[in-house]
Image 1: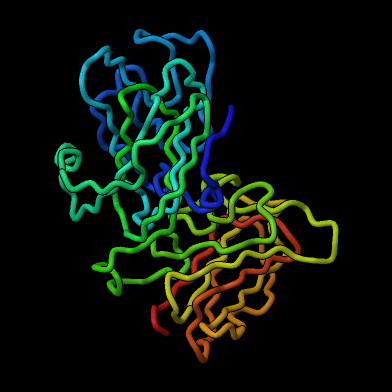
Image 2: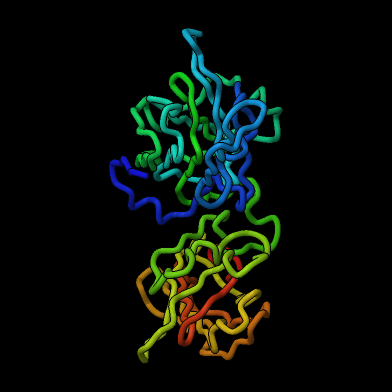
Length: 325
């Protein structure tokens, strides 16, 4: 499979639309050959040749019927699992060769409340995020988005029809301001605006998964590094949802047995870069949700570095506290 793009650094950011984060394809005007829900499935699309259903070859993607001169285009609406700022989209046409759309476009919308899907699709205030652009078949077509607004929904439009395997919407989570301050607040949650800035190693899986909602069900839903053969240790650095006071840390090694870290520590960084010890190096157990109360820092912190010793895997990291310090 080939790749067409205009810069792909944004693909290291979390996919705000993926099903694992609560994304949903809520509407499509046509899904004759393949279901719209496949667009946001985790993992790459699969293909088995000569597997035919009553509507043709079975595809792991979304595919509409041929227009044959019929006017108009086909569209699908995705409710983001985590609303936020979109930095780029990937329109993946894997396995679609003679039946991919020649052009696509993507638009965004902010929806309040829970109106019906058809009502959302029919709204006329969709804002362009990606103008009509050509795509290749059997390709990961990546496109940066330059827009600083918060979006809750995106619409993928095919010009005029065809099949797309996956839609990835990479960006940074932004919380609903109406919900802030109404309950316990996880400063390290993607959905609240936290973001992984960097890490030492992402050999087995992405560190973004540390900040996912819910519990990890299997090892592959956490962050795991390669085995170290030196005297160093692995780490991940996280920008919090905002400067604040971290009161409680949850370091979860669930599903990691022979490959969990032996210990971990947490270091905070204030707005001027000053380091603040939040949790001294502390032993960890395998397959355990550890909760550690933290001593209040003299100043609020805006970034946190989690060090694991020497390497291994974690399921989740939670940092509960208050914005503002």
